[in-house]
Length: 158
Image (cartoon, rainbow, N blue to C red; front, top):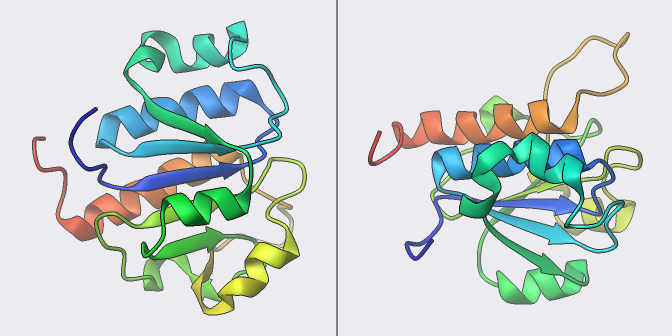
């Protein structure tokens, strides 16, 4: 992908290859770049990753970085939003812009408190009933990405 990504989707230490594959497919659908922060809970050549991404994985604009600090250096100056069940703002209240960075935690641990403490006013949550501990990571990413796209007025070429 040579054009500037519509969004940057960051998975901080993802655990489940199927989720990452599905998120990669969503990134292709909207023209977002997928960033993976190590350590990963799977190998990047894992069959489950490719199966979930289906035949789209070769079209995913993706990159792996070693740390949160490296990612911040690479995407310096771009606004970022962290998604967490402890967020102080609802997803719908965030004014998304093209080029924003959307940061999601691992399926088992979420985002570390140190990341959430950096910009607490930019911690977002999806509304859900207390009976539910969390939502599937791929479903959450899809919801957030498409809310951002809705705010942009749709995709440029769709």
